[in-house]
Amino acid sequence: MGGKHRSIECAPALPMPLPKIDQLRWYPDGEAILLRGRDLANRYGFYRLDTESVHLTPILTEGVPSHAAVNGMFSPDGKYLYYLGLPNLTLRLLMRLDLRTGKPREV
Image (spheres, rainbow, N blue to C red):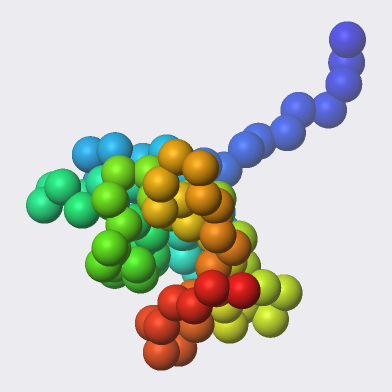
């Protein structure tokens, strides 16, 4: 059993910034995490969590009741967030959020 031992360095734990988190993805720049969940004001949506400062920024919360925006995925260039909009039980819309302007639109 004389194998080599490796040490694993762990990053410090981040505090839970939202009371409910149900999806997360790394930002393309690797400096933040995209969270999808509910904040303390009961707003559902997408949030940016900076991993250095632990600052939480709402990205899309307007008009996102409960599970109406899910499965956020970044464009390869990191300029847009694509997500599935669920305005009702039978309708699904592919949406694109411009991360520079904050404007969503149907694709």
